[in-house]
Length: 296
Ligand code: SF4
Image 1 (cartoon, rainbow, N blue to C red):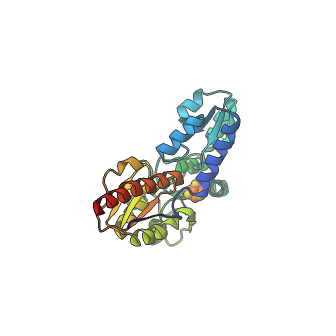
Image 2 (spheres, protein in one colour):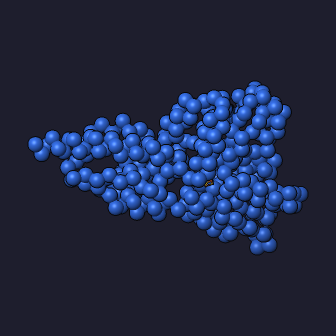
Image 3 (tube, rainbow, N blue to C red):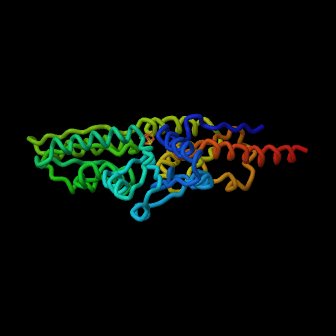
């Protein structure tokens, strides 16, 4: 016998669910809506929404667009995007995740309060990531982005520092950065730090590890571009060496070894539930029929 279980903790976070609902609601009345950047890092979900009329555009294309409706996805945008949209007569459907929005406001508040005081506003995050660009935009581009330990050399440890985190970074990584800055700052320097990591992602980590360890075989489903997917898959692999990364159900071409009885299907925060269900169906189709034939 083979049993297939889908991880109930996997799939879209509420920020992404909200953004997709906003797009679907809008597309109910119209067949033309633009989205600035992929609504989610999953090409199959992007294709599904494209078929309903959602066109993905980049910032250059936004600059050339006039008098249309544009959805801003969960990652958020810098103030310059809102200004550009206003100048071009664009109607914004703002699906920025409330957690990101809160963080943007927090950074903006600290920026205004510390302006002219030589305080360094620092963001622990991925350079060039849409959310980070939106956060840096709250400081008129002055915030310093720290991606890894070596980047700390960019900081002046004789000046005050206020540290924030991109919402999807790991708690361990953030703690290590906090500790390293704490050790290097001069005695008279004020160092404030805010753990602004979203628990929707951070809590997935222990959940996915437990799920992976409880099964004989894991199919981890995520888009190639999903950084959250890569990180969670690495954890799966550590907990269960029989973990396989796939993006589509049809990547599963062969039945599983006879010793495998419990198969788990899990994914990233950008993996749609319908895709994990398709994968579960494919596993059953391939293995149940195959095993029945073998026992005949
Ligand atoms: S991971 Fe958290 S902050 Fe980011 S979109 Fe999802 S719910 Fe919002």
